[in-house]
Length: 314
Ligand SMILES: NCc1[nH]cc(CCC(=O)O)c1CC(=O)O
Image 1: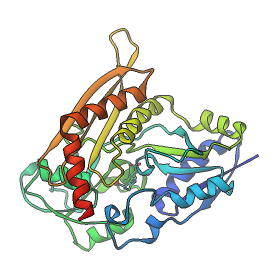
Image 2: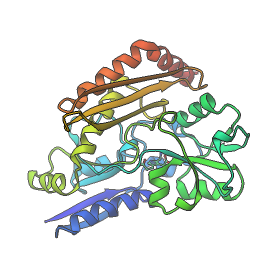
Image 3: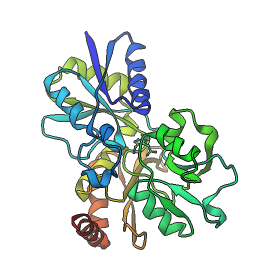
Image 4: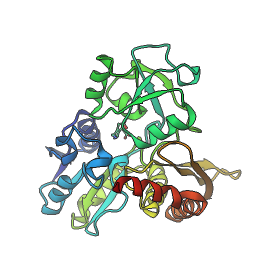
C-alpha cells in the first residue's frame, strides 16, 4: 500500500508535505508526493481578498482527492476553508506549532511597542486591522507572495518589517530575522494558524484513513481545531474577513482538561474590535465554537461583517 500525498509546490507547502511523509515513512508506510499548482499560486498580482477567497489554494487539490489521483491533501489548517464539500473531510490535524505572529526584519532594533513609526508589509486583513487598532503609528504596505517573495521585498526595502506567522518563519529557518514575538492578548491568531490539516475524500479506504489518523493526528490539537473551525463556519466569514480564533486546552483543578477559546472580529479600519472568551468541557468542541461565534455576532459582529461585505461589493 502506498499513500499519495498532494501538496502545493511552495517551499512552506512542501515542508508540510515532507513533515507528514516523514511521520508515515517512520512507521514503514510507503508514500509519494504529488505537487499540484493552485489558482492562489498562479495569481500573484492581486490581493487574495479580491480574487475571491474561497478555495484559491485548495480547489485543484480537492479535484484530485475526488478522482483518487491523490489519497490526502496537506494544507496549512489556516488556509483550509471551514466548510468543506459534503464528499470531503479533514481526517487529521498535526500537533500545533507556536501560534503567535512575529515581526520580521533585518533591523534588530525595530519594535511595535517602541511607539516609533516604520513601514510594515502584510496583506492579511486581520493583521492590517490589528496594526491600525493597537499600533496606529505604523505605516502599512500591501505585501503578497510566498514567504521567500516577501523576504526578498523586505531585502529590497519595500518595507522595514513583515508581520508573519511564527510557524512559517520557523519552518523556513528564518528565526534569526524575528525581532518581536507579538503578544497573543493583542494579536490573537487566525483559526488554524500553526497546524497542518490532512484532507481526504470520504471514499478513501478505511484502512488508509485509520493509518493516517493513527500516525498523523494529535488528539489535543484536534479538539482545539474543531472548536476553531466551528467558530469560523458559524461566522460564515471566509479568509478575507479579519476574524481571529484560538482554542487551547487548559488544566482543571482536578488535573483534567477543559477548552478555552478566545475569538472575535475586527473592523477593517481597526476601530471596532470584538473579543469573546469562553470555556467548556472537552467533549463538545464544536459546540464551544458555535457558542463563541453566536456571542461575537450578537455583540456587534453582524454589523462588522455587513460593513465589510458592503465594501467588497463596491
Ligand atoms: N497565509 C499564508 C500562510 N499560510 C500558513 C502560513 C504559516 C504557517 C501556518 O500558520 O500554518 C502562512 C504564512 C503567514 O501567514 O505568515
